[in-house]
Length: 360
Image 1: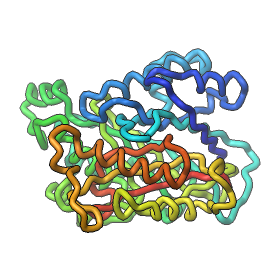
Image 2 (image 1 turned 135 degrees about the horizontal axis):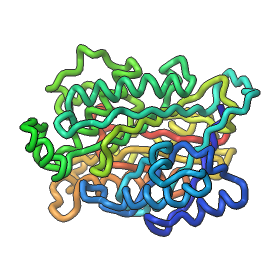
Image 3 (image 1 turned 120 degrees about the horizontal axis):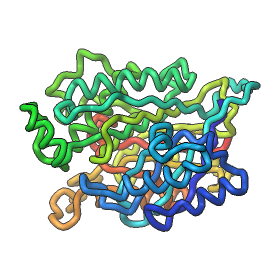
Image 4 (image 1 turned 180 degrees about the horizontal axis):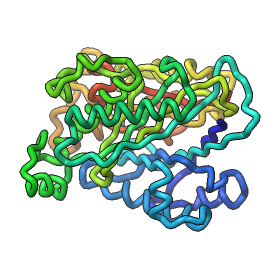
């Protein structure tokens, strides 16, 4: 397996110009594209339509180059978008290609490998429930196998994007007399993100099934994964799982590592993730290919009171993204960072995960 990592800037949610340029000059084989992870300048909420807009734009752009319809492209490529580029965060997308060379190199320290899997449609009444957890856990196991990573300890980042509730989904459940975890679309985000994160932990064996009950999801934050990063959007019906790690039979020219951000101003956590991937200061910023992180809001940071949780004008997730994004960019020198809000079951309470891909 050889995984290519290509970060492109976006002037708007439908801007595919840099992607087309890389296809035209031969840098990206459009038929080898398997995933796109990106940030759009929407609000990140249940009514953030920039995510679906970006998916459609990329699918329409790739379709003629792949000999497919746009719908077929969306079926074959995992598109993961997070809305909200507050502060210095820059709208962008990271395009992943995957090929089989036939002469895989052997790297005892491992090189980047990527596995992809998808759940079935998650029904509205299943969002944020144990069924949601179990469906993601099964897909994570399949993604690990797809990546060719035998040891879960070599998995460093599992990005899951799945559905949250919307007014239409709530109405659908009501029409069938099905109970829901909540009737608030935005309020369903913690349940959806939490269930998916618990699914990652369960699928990788980080947590045992006995520790996860219906009362755990979005409530008991002492149960968590250390490599999950989950996001939810109303535009989705399935959960898309992108599992990244290092495998000895990968011929990629990069590695991935991860660490923990102790709080929103923990620059050391970003440095630790870079070091875990094998990066040194001598490599220079151009060797940093991509950074993925979560932002966690807090009423206090290192003993000092913040207004993140009490600001009625700006949602606390937007505060967290802006703060953490600036700190991470100060380390990497690049504000094109994939940083989404909400860390339910994705780390210990108050912490947040961060992962980095660097040139090997």
